[in-house]
Amino acid sequence: MVRVAAQKFAHIEGSQRAAAFAYNAFFALFPLILLMVALASLILDRSTAGTAVIGYIERYVPIGGEMQRHLFDTVLRVVKARRQAGILASVMLIWAATQFFTTLVHAANRAWGTEGHTWWQRPLKNITLLVIMVPAALIGVTVPVLGKMARGVFQASVFFPWAYALCVFFVPRLVLFLGLSLFYKFAPRRHTRFSEVWISALCATVLLQAAQNMFVLYLQHFSALNAVYGAFGGTIALMLWIYVSGLIFIFCACLCAAQAATGGRFIPAKK
Image (cartoon, rainbow, N blue to C red; front, side, top):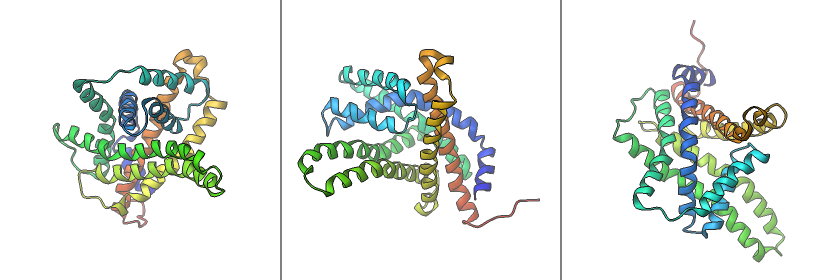
C-alpha cells in the first residue's frame, strides 16, 4: 500500500501540489481565523473567542518562541480591532477561506483517478467541505475553553483535573482525525466508504504529530531563519510548516486510493 501510494504521489506530482497548497493555505489562513472567530463568538465573547481560536491554531503551527508570538500576536490584534463585516466582506471572507481546499480536492481526485469538478462545482465543493470541517474545528476550540470555565466549579473534585487533562490532550487530536476522515471521504468525486479512509486519516494524524515534534527540533537546533530572513523568519517558518503539512495531506490521500486499489493486500512490484 505504501509503495503504491508513493507511486501515485509521484505520478500526480505531489510535492508541486503541496507547494501550491502552501501558497493557497497561507493566504486562506487569516480569513479562516477571522471566520472561526466570528462563529465562535456565537458561543463565547469576542475576546475569549479570538484568544481561543489563536491558541487552537498555534497547537498545529510548531514555529514556537519569538517567531510564533510576533506572528500570532499581530493576528490577535487584528481580530480584536476588526469591526463587524458587511455582507460583501463576509462573502469574500468565506471565498478566501475555501481556496486552500481547491488544491487538496484536485490532488485527491487525481490520486483516485477521477475527473475533477467543473468550474461552477469547485466553489460549491469547497464551501461544502468548509461547512463540514469548521464545526469540528469549533468543537476543538470551545471544549477546552468550556473546560477551563468549569474548572472553578469542579476544582474540588478529584476526578475533574484528570478528566480535564485528558480532554485537552485528546480532543484536538480527535478533532483532527475526524476532520481528515471527513475530508478524505467527501473530497473525491466518487462514493468513498469510511473503511477506505480512516486508516489514512489516522496515519495523517500521527504523521502530523511526529512532523510537528521534528519541526520544533529543526527550528530550535538547525534552522537560522531569523538570521537569514530577519523579521520575516516567522512567516517563512509558517509557510515551510504548511508545505510539510501539505505533503502529508496529499500523500495520505494517495494512501486512501492505494488501499482501495490493493484491497489491503501486498502487490509485488512490476518487472
